[in-house]
Length: 380
Ligand code: NAD
Ligand code: TYD
Image 1 (cartoon, rainbow, N blue to C red):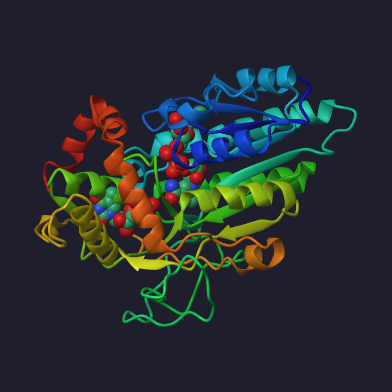
Image 2 (image 1 turned 90 degrees about the horizontal axis):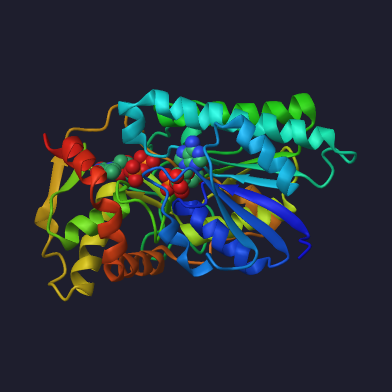
């Protein structure tokens, strides 16, 4: 079949990438969707079982740092769109092994950019109809202060924040023009990759877009991140290692809402622009942990709150950012995107998914990961 477009989604076997691949494969049968992933510990093709036989889907196992292989793929498949999610993504790992983050997130991104440049510039139409869309994080902006620890009403309404939890922990937000100020090796590497992407637009005219999203939650997230890790630990009555006092604030968005935003921006976003993605949905870690405990307890037929005693305060993460809060007004006004789910609804769906998919959890937590987790947490 002749496809209208051929796009590569890097990191498509990971958490967010798998939701983006599923959305594109199902929504655009006229597109050929190539999932390019190295399948690190975080990549899992089981995340895509439901689309693996779709005629417009294919998988390529490749390291984004392999310039020659990617350049060849660009030529062979006549790629006209790249949605780039592949990355090392966990802050705690970046603190232990920053080199790996520089290699994948910086050099890998640069390698994709250069291969895309060489291929697209060799075509008669050059960059026309092409797009290099880079997925980044709000963490590149640094950390916000908690100026109103007791919570204030934000001056806007959104579907992601529910009526029972509609507060912001400060008066300031991350805007698209907030100065970059990354603190962790993870966010420093992501910031660097963002700069390279913009440099390819400014220097060579490549049609790039960058988006910076807040913390995602939902099915298929690797259980080293707060929400799936804690759901699994509550289920198995293992300690919940809360860093510091549990007062750090994160801004949470359901992963399918992020995937929908990526779809909207890939098709309708303006070239060379930056869009922040988030649902104005700030939570202190300790509050979210209590919601998780109550939800898991209820769904397992335990008494709600029975497992509160699992909360274990441990040594704080080095350089732990106090607060992230995204202002996504530009995306909402310009492209009409808004989150579809309220947080309680999203958390209920998420907890149910992990409880119903214990096999998925067992598969990803066995073997090497188990050893890594034990070594990270043994001393706490
Ligand atoms: P993830 O760790 O779940 O998945 C990353 C994927 O990239 C995995 O499938 C992995 O195998 C693949 N990968 C890693 N190194 C690779 C390499 N060298 N070559 C090819 N593939 C490689 O990450 P995620 O949480 O889904 O995040 C995806 C992207 O979104 C990242 O760029 C991340 O910075 C960004 N992001 C994540 C969040 C979040 O809350 N998770 C929020 C904002 C932005
Ligand atoms: P995480 O899911 O790692 O995302 P990020 O660091 O990118 O925001 O962590 C979310 C918050 O939860 C963060 O403030 C760190 C905290 N946290 C814990 O308190 N304990 C844990 O075991 C983990 C993994 C995270």
